[in-house]
Image 1 (cartoon, rainbow, N blue to C red):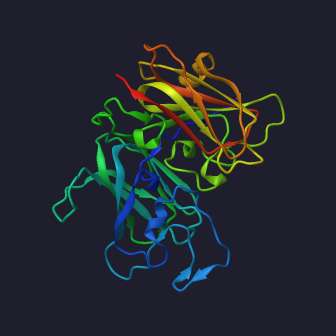
Image 2 (spheres, rainbow, N blue to C red; image 1 turned 90 degrees about the vertical axis):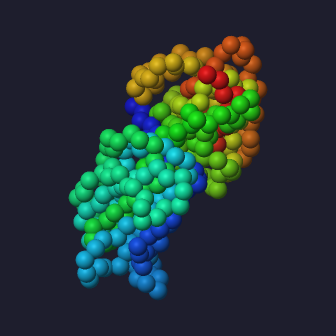
Length: 328
């Protein structure tokens, strides 16, 4: 089996979930809102605005007294955080010296009496790099506070974990079981050279080709694939493969497999077993810039919580939507 890319779970700070920056002490040089942009940070050589060099991230002015800067993110969906990425890409010489994280669970308006829990102690930050840290506290949180010491710039803050969906009652409604809004996440894929696999779980229509999953060109008999853990176990009745914006680089064909795994397994184990999963959609022809709907005929007793999408031989998909009813 080819080397594959491990899933990152869901980025709970993604604005496509409804997450937003609700407070910042300062963002003189670069808007705090950029820190949760789901796209990788970019650098615009020689571009300046009225405050100085344009930077793709959050950047505060230089402090001349005591204190430190911070911002607060309200998560679009409450969830558990397993690891974080404090990304200082393109910030070299203007990155903070240290950073820490606090979080809280609060369904009301934040105030001076809000109790915050430290989930990441002071960590040294370096220039122009990703800083990944595991989070031991597995409580459900609604807000996260990023503290930077004493000031500076951070390109992105990504909070990887899982949405809390156990208390949501879907009833008998048909829902998109592979939407990140319903807790779906990527287990793994073999390639995401041009576009990240997690984009296929996003709500709404893709903005452009960059807002989808796209693999490099295959030069052999290989094919590409990705595996999705559904937000909830369900009975599937329709799968939609959307190639919106992919006009000269859509896959020629695709197939879909599915299974129900009742116990927790490692990503590696799931990937190894996935080749033998039940076929839900046989190799089907795909077309450019189009939604392809496939009706799924499965026994009434069958249920699925993982699906695997194979594309032949390569290419891009904007969204994968799996419609069905939630079951226990």
